[in-house]
Length: 468
Image (cartoon, rainbow, N blue to C red; front, side):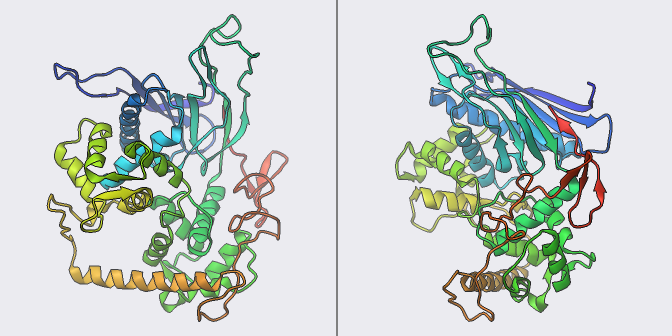
């Protein structure tokens, strides 16, 4: 209360299925609040608290927990949209009763991606705060309590260590009266300038680099484009790209800006081509959280190397919210768009088709409608679609040729100035495409006398608020 005013709240009980009489079973609940800082102009903050279905060792309860997580994401999307807080930082905390949080997120993501519906970016980009086991009893010793957050908007300053018990001791006990240890974290919100730089770097890394990435939302891509579009001309020109790369502290061994611009018409990047370049380079192998989809596949297939479509449909029925009809489940499977005659799906195909099913920045329902026959009915002219596909294909070809020319020590294409490519920041050691940052991943500021100073402009910025 000393730091926040509550702007809005919403609570709901999970619908976990129907009992023998047809009544909806409701056993657990979720609460979310929208908070506004009492002081300063920082963005509002969304806090989600929940308690998922019991027994983390019961695999049959995984389906129930997935249903609950999909309901959380559905309500979070509606809640933040209703209150104009779609870009607000989100922290989720609670007893998730799961040994593998990534598995739950991966299965839930599969459901909502394949529906083609918009979903909150939290499902894509949530990061766990690392802790030790939070429940040490005679029955189990595992981490089932979690705090998750959006790392592109917040950074962890401190994690209070979870108590370590002497060998053989369990909880609850006299010193720890609960069967759960608390998870205590101190966060700092990143300022808007820092977040904008990170979004711009993420786009550049996706298009011109090789590192794995979290997918960007529509608003985040627009923000990244505006970072490069220095004069707000709705096009990125050479001088825009050069200035942005200097601000991103990217030192290139060769004229990469020109190589990149050569891939685009008239050597300038419009917003539409900015998006197309991102899409053609962000395949399933580039997505950082692809391991969670692999967890989801293992759950669907029961550990097998492939899964029949019939079995996949049964699994979808089990984990989708009870509000989904049989028709909607069939439509979901049709969105997988598998090759004709293919009745089995392996893990690679599964990840690929799910990632293609929808990007988090694109609402596919605006562009197409899927019927039970599986036919696509374009909402705009076929000629427009054909021109768009042709230009996208050409852009993809040019970007691929550019990357072939960047292969270290083995230039393989005819693009001029064939060269090796690597993103550097002040020649400091770091991963390919990930500039070295002395303070923290993605940090661009030095702390001087309690204030943040941009190393490029040296202008003073307010210190970021902290959340405990």
